[in-house]
Length: 429
Image (cartoon, rainbow, N blue to C red):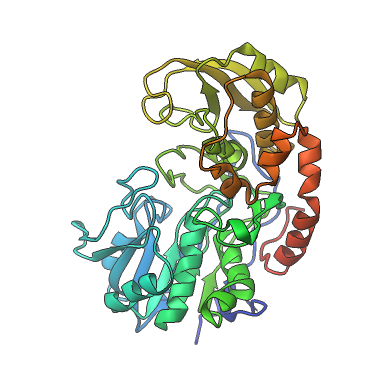
């Protein structure tokens, strides 16, 4: 396929993957995560670069887009509205994930099948659909090219990356071409951390064995999925093309990018939320509140009967990059709705040193130690979040944070070696 000299500055074939990756020269190196007031690097997303090249990758195609409210331009116009208004693109369908295309649904919900009032385009629901059922939706839509553009937050159990995976598998089954438009990992792409999923515990919060904090962008994940997992699920890789960002480096936090932050889901209001989420989301697997129904979800944690002892115990561990404050709050919905409960608020003071997964484990260990009411969710949902029964059983047996972290290191080391093959962005120098 002919591509303009301006766009195609490099051509990287994905190992074991059909298709190509479009890459651009990165901006000059600059310290990651600039302090407020410093000039931000101007990152151009995959969509920015696709548009700048006149949508050549989509020319002559019947296009469907998998997206949500995060699929926006630099001036926060939604890409579906932009594409629909452009005669160079034949946009014929939209596919919505969890929370929906326009973002009207809460956690565990979607918008269903409807016609979008703004564009008249048919919107199909992909949430919790996979395999042949999802392939049939692609076939019914009449598209021949499926485009994915959603902002991820860097955690294995955030469902958009598994919508990506499910759509790639379904595209193989339906005979569709697949294009991924890249966006930054807001908590950096420096390293993978945390336990790796045991395939026996696969679910929609983790289909395949990747680390809890994967340290990859969605385009890099698409390349990894296509090289390692899609052929096993669908018989062959999908016809995949990825459009990379320009100007992004692996050490960049979101505020280094110059890009607008649009909440990817109702309880992910800020990049600060994303920073702690790979660890504190584990509290969804307990009877404690993870802060839903507050203005600081995943930064506030607590339950009825928890007091100052939890913050004190957590602070005694001297975990890098974070302090814990005794806090009291009343969630407006979800666990403990309308009741004032006690707990902790995380205050990350050094995000370079902060390890969200280790911190989340430490908070589970200390919560169980200081609060007699601590309990796991009855369905052992914690096992799906951590990727196996290991964390739960070790905590129940009295293991400490460092012992638990040590237990996942062999699998994490193996994953990091596989991951390295698919990384496409430089580290800050």
